[in-house]
Length: 225
Image (cartoon, rainbow, N blue to C red; front, side, top):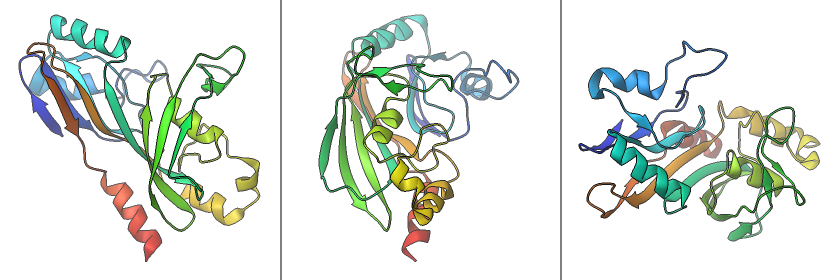
């Protein structure tokens, strides 16, 4: 879904299941660029969302916009907000996770918490809603490492529902009902809810929001019935 367009940028609500860049093992799979090309011509990837992750993503429509946006992301001047469904019942309303992270830190190419060799990383997490056995949180990554939110949430015992990569805490593995609930969501339940940055041409601050996808709403409704 197109959220905004002008001569410099294209902002979309990326659906889950679509790659941002070609897969090295399956190069024929559709990507954002190939899906948008017929209507929008060449667009340039500025930042990425995982294949499973839905939500707001900005693309550049010319080299100047690409350079300006790339600089904002590199200098961490872009504000990103994510929503996620996580297993567990938090006792906190807000928590700051500051565990150092090392990208591609094991044989499964996970981002791992590494106090000695990891780089400084911070994610602020707010509890939005509590449900029966799971919760909805809002995550604000102050840094922007690959899989940062997934790794940080898993590290404090609240892994994202459906995440096939990050390990469950031993306590959850020992609770069959929680394990069934964790695996019931058909993808990693992570959604890029909002994105704020400076327009590369006008210099004005702009912000975009993508409503939570239907699979979030459907899952929550099915568990409340």
